[in-house]
Amino acid sequence: MKDKTVFETLSTIDVSGFTKELKTNYSSLSYLSWADAWKNLKITYPNASFKIIKDSDTNLPYVGSDIGAMVFTEMSIEGVTHEMWLPVMDNNNQAMKKVAYKYKVKNGEREVKAMTMFDVNTALMRCLTKNMAMFGLGLNIYTGEDLPLTHEDFLSEEELKVKAKADAKTKAKDEAKALKEAKASAKKQDLINEYVHKIDVNCAREEAGEVHTLIGELDKSIKAGVWSGVSEMSKVYIKSDNYINATTEELVA
Image 1 (cartoon, rainbow, N blue to C red):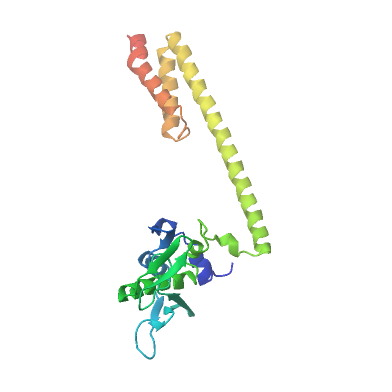
Image 2: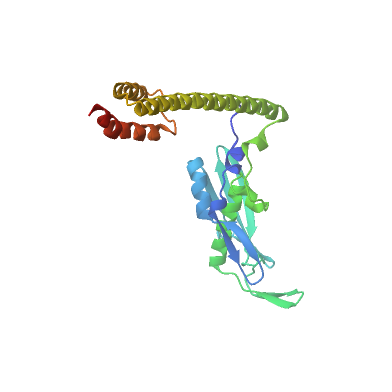
């Protein structure tokens, strides 16, 4: 069996329980918080690292122009490095600029406020989360799928055939075991019913000695584990106790 790649390992982690919903006046988006994403990543790959790419001219954590601003991150896991970028955007996914501006929509105009360093920070953490998705973690959220990939998605056609044969063999083995246990359980139940019937008959005949012998044999078998786990066992104990404490005492008396 080949070793799993970083992408295969991370893309099969289910992070659906960590997703949140962001509602705005115009849209509703599902997202994975950077903290939850980073936690799951570091649990799996403790040596994972990232860095924020700064503007070489300004040393600020974004690159800006008249049309907006872009942030960049870089992440390394197990010797593999991916870079990611993301515009500084508002909650409606509209690019923000250094000054506020308006844009036309079907029903009029909407305003995008001027960006602040808070918006830059938000973009950086969103970019970091997106960077992790490039390695597979939470990628299904970006593709609009409810569930992550499974390990079978990475198997070749030949490997899938081998797995199918192995699964069929395991299933047949489990079914045979279940059938064998069912037959054994039924046999044990028949033996118990036989003992109970003998006890009933001998009590009716007022054969105290025979009753004690049968109960003794039954109790010995139970203690030896011959009938362990049989559903009727508690009934047998109750019946035996009733005969010992009531019927057989009357017979002996």
